[in-house]
Picture 1 (tube, rainbow, N blue to C red):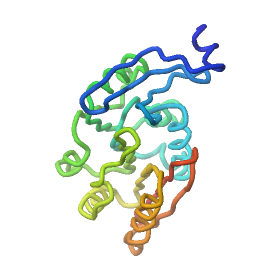
Picture 2 (tube, rainbow, N blue to C red):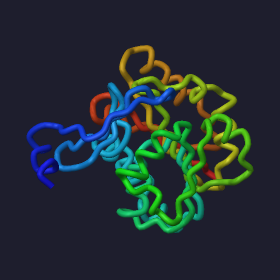
Picture 3 (cartoon, rainbow, N blue to C red):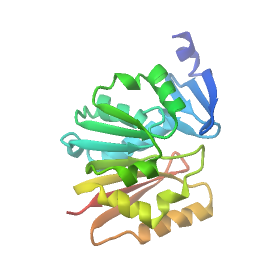
Length: 221
C-alpha cells in the first residue's frame, strides 16, 4: 500500500526481468496502479488500457456484451481483457494469443489473469494462430508490439485478408497502432485507403496518448 501511495509522486519498479522475445519487462507502480512496460513502451494498463478502452467505447459496450467470442492478438498483461470482463461485464468466451510465455507468467502473478474464468490463453505466434484457427469471432483485437516496433506482417494483404475472413457478420476489428515517424504515418494512411470499402466500414481514432492511432473496422454483413 505504501508503494501504491508513493507511486503518485514517482514510479516504483517492483519487478524486472528479460525474455528472449520481449527483452526488458518491468512491473511498476505508477499513479496508484500496476502497469506492465517494456524498455520504451507501455505494454498493459496505464495509457494502453485507456487507449483500448476508448476503442471499445467507440464500438459500443452495449454491442460487445452480447458477443459470443472475442479474439485478442497480443495479450501482454491483459489490460484490455480486464476492461472487457470487469468494466463491460462481458461473459462470452475470450481467446488470448500471446507469443511470450514469460509475459503470461507475469500477467498471472501480478494481474491475476489466470483467475478469469472465460479466458483461454494460447501461447503462439499471432500469424501462425490466425492461419490455423477455424473459429469465427465477433471482435478481433490486434495489439501486437515488440517494444515500440510493430511486425510488418500486420500490414500485409495476406494477413489482413485472413483476419477479415475470421470475422462473423457485423463483427469488428480493433487495431492498435503506433506512429513514431512519417513513414509509419504513411503506412497507416495506405492501410486505411486500400481497405475493402464495399464490405467493411473503417475509421481511425488518431493521436491517442501522443503516438497511438486506433483503426476500427466493422464488417457490413
